[in-house]
Structures are given as C-alpha cells and as structure tokens.
Length: 161
Image (cartoon, rainbow, N blue to C red; front, side, top):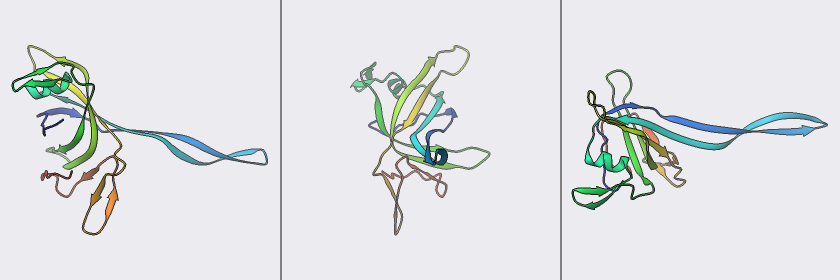
C-alpha cells in the first residue's frame, strides 16, 4: 500500500480480536490449583465489504502491481503490507478512528459481479504486531503495538505515522 488509498463505501466491517490463553497450575502436596491464565496468542482481523469498484481496489483485490501508469499486473505480489487509518462514521452511535501501524491486506471470497446490484468485494485487514510503535502526547509515550482508537478527533485524519 504505497500511496494512501480509500476503499470508498464500506458496507460492512467488523473488528475481531482473537486471544487464546494457556492455563497455569501449581501443584502442592498432590493437588493442582489453577493460579492464572496466560495469553498465548493475540490476533486482530478486520473483515470488510466494499462496493466502490475502481482500478485501485481491483489491483489490491488481485494482489496486483503497477506495470505502467494505467494498467496493473494480476497476482504479482505475495502480500500487501502497510499501515491503515480506519475512520468510522455513522448516523447513530460513536465516531472514531482506529490507527493501525502495521497491517496486511488480504482478499477474501470473490469479487461479486451481479448485474442487478453493486459490484462488491471482500477484504480482511490483519493487524500485525509492531512492538516499538508508540503514541505520544505532551509528556509521555504509550506503547501501542496493535494501534489505538481516537475518540477525540474522529473527523480529523492527520498522519500519525
């Protein structure tokens, strides 16, 4: 994702955290007692459906690379890594930004070519761990390896990278 892109109208999106735990026990005098749960794996994915077809969206959907200014090759990249800022605006409910320092974009499912409806496609953004990414304010820096949510300025997209 070299240049900033917009996927246009996102019909459906869902933030899906997946955390697995391993149980830890202590054994004293033949009796096992659970004393804690430890996080074993962390994963965040964001599946979404878009309905604004464009050359850029098809390029990313087909893992394409630019060959000349107006064309692209199909299946020329293994994966598309970058960073993302997701802006959530609704008529009902809270508005916020999710700023993600490192993601991989994956096409999911098919590119729907229905004659009586909008053409749409499905992507998944997989949030990758960025162990050194920090959010700075006036006096401190907080570690945010999976990004952060901003409720204070949801309509102001700057460049936090």
